[in-house]
Length: 89
Image (cartoon, rainbow, N blue to C red; front, top):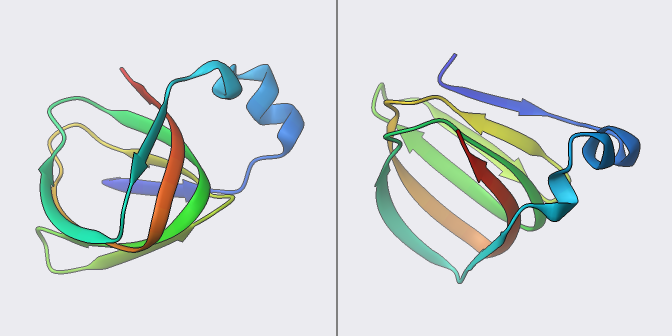
């Protein structure tokens, strides 16, 4: 699993402490990224397409809980400005 996209209830997010995680924001843009550690995040606002190094594309938007595995290389295409709670592990 390189990227996992889930729908979690408000109660699940609250139980996992997601709402206490820091918030990251990003304007509409394109950029390359490498995950040197696993990242989990909950997208509060926005819409993103991510091209993975294997040629596949994943799409996520507000309300999605996303996990990127350690070692993933990708290119982010932020289509609508992003606001997300995030945690690296």
